[in-house]
Length: 117
Length: 117
DNA sequence: CGGCATCCGCCAGGATACTG
DNA sequence: CAGTATCCTGGCGGATGCCG
Image (cartoon, chains in turn purple, cyan, orange, brown):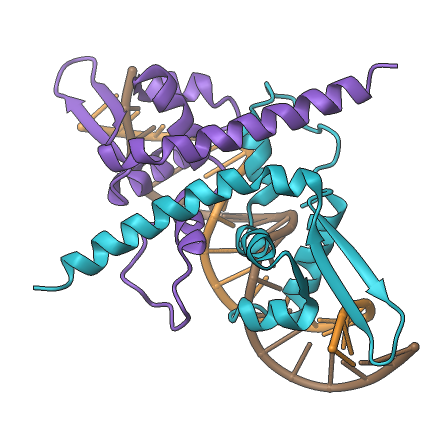
């Protein structure tokens, strides 16, 4: 989304700010996987986020980079190699996503238990 | 969004699960304000979330209720009174949103500082 | 006061094909 | 391998008006 400096006429809410930066269908998962693996190539991300198309992956990565959450390192080789890592700002976001993960995991466990008679 | 039992053919990712439940433009803020004020009426929420239309507020509250994150208590009086509170599951989500708030707040502070020469 | 009913625009996201 | 380039659709969210 690449937050453009405040269009908003309304009181800035930090929660809203955070959601606008990591909202969208894939951003959370990309950041989380980058945290787990430290560094991931484009193709590795595609294999990790099964339900993403190349277009959406490129687009989302570009937005995250513009927002300063991830770093893109391109090695000019043949075949090409591009690696993505978290920036310091991105790393600061990990505890929050970690909490979301824990919560989601717990809910999924409860759901599983409920479906086992 | 009211997660319908897994359509997803793909490996369930807890982060994805969490984002599908609290994604959308307003859900995070609604949960956060409910946490701060404990209990809020419909009209109070409208005044708190300035950029929301009645339709979106009703719709979002209904989704959150179906997802079991908030509780709706309707008092049959004239004039009507409806109060919203967090459910236990919703309360478990607060630490995560709190982390997001802290992160967003910090980034906003840094932005403010950068714009002050 | 606390909604619901309609209608609608827009853009996030999807499908498919191609390229340096 | 790591992306672009197009074209297209669905549904999120907006605007307006009415109701118990």
